[in-house]
Image 1 (cartoon, helix red, strand yellow):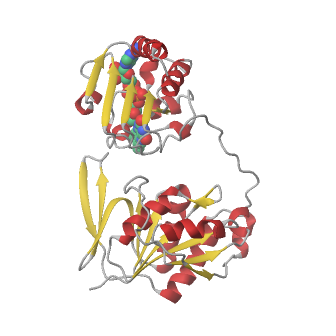
Image 2 (image 1 turned 135 degrees about the vertical axis):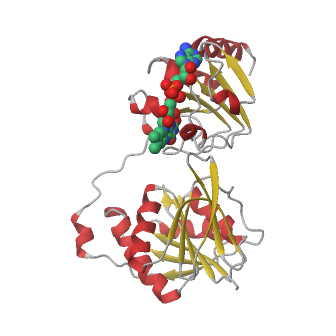
Length: 326
Ligand SMILES: Cc1cc2nc3c(=O)[nH]c(=O)nc-3n(C[C@H](O)[C@H](O)[C@H](O)COP(=O)(O)OP(=O)(O)OC[C@H]3O[C@@H](n4cnc5c(N)ncnc54)[C@H](O)[C@@H]3O)c2cc1C
C-alpha cells in the first residue's frame, strides 16, 4: 500500500529550523511518500521555511502565533497539530526526540488515540511502516510494525540520520494555520529563556569530543579537558555520574539520557563505559579510551586504549599539542 503524506514536526532553534527537523526531512524523503511536509509553530517559523524546503518539505503548515513561544509548547502544539492531522490525514508524523518533541508526540497520540513509537533509530515503509529501536541500553535492536491506525507517530533520536539537502529542493507552499490555544494552557507562561554561551563547536556537531567521567577525580580536572578539547578544535562531553555530582552542567552529558554524538574522534577519559553512556557515543568513527583499569568495559569498544591515569595522559597530550606549530 502506498504511503500517503509524511509530516515532520519542525522545531525552531534560535530562529532556524532545528537540526533534528532537517534530519527527519532527509529520512522522510527516502520513504516513497506521496508528499513530504513540515509543520512549524512559533513567531520565527517564517524564517525556517526556506531551509525546510531545501531539505525536501514541499509544504510548510505554519503558525507564527506568539503563544507558541510565550506558553509551554506541548499543549498548544498538540492541539493545533491534532486539528491539522484530522483535516489533512497524513499517514505518518515524525518528531525529534527532544523535550518538546516528546511532549507534543505523547499528547497527540492520546488525543488522536493512535500509537507512538519512541526512541527510533530508523524507519522503513513498505507494506507496513516499521520502526527500528534499540532497547536495554542499545544491546538489542527491535523492529516494530505499526498497525492500520493513522497517523502513525514516531520519535527519533538526534543524529539517527545525517541531514542533507534535497537534490531539487523547492520553495515550499506555505499554509497558514490557525493556532488552537485552550484557556488551560494559558495558566503557565514561559518567564525567561537563557542561551548557554559556549566557545568552540557544539557538542552534537563537534568532530572531536573529549569526554570526562568520575575517573577525573573532581570538577577542577575539567579545565584540563577543556584545554585539550580547545587545542583539538573539539568540544567537551561528560558521563552522567559527573553531571549528577554537579561537576559540569547537564548540557554536556553524553548517553541514553543525554546527547548522542557521532564525532570523528571520541576520547573517553576516566569513563567506565556503562551501556547507558556508550549508547550515546558508539557511533563515533574512532574511540580512544583512557582508564586506569585494564578491565574497564570502555576498552571493549575502544579502537585505541591507554591504561593509565587520565590526568597524567591528558597533561602529556596537552603539552604535546601545545608544542606543535599551528
Ligand atoms: C536510566 C539510566 C540512564 C542513564 N543515562 C546515562 C547517560 O545518559 N550517560 C551516562 O554517562 N550515564 C548514564 N547512566 C549512568 C551509567 O549507568 C553510569 O553510572 C555512568 O555512565 C558512570 O559514569 P562514569 O563512567 O563517569 O563513572 P564510573 O562508573 O564510576 O567509572 C569511573 C571510571 O574511571 C576510572 N578511573 C578511576 N580513576 C581513574 C584515573 N585516575 N584515571 C583514569 N581512569 C580512572 C575507573 O576505572 C572507572 O572505569 C544512566 C543510568 C541509568 C540507570
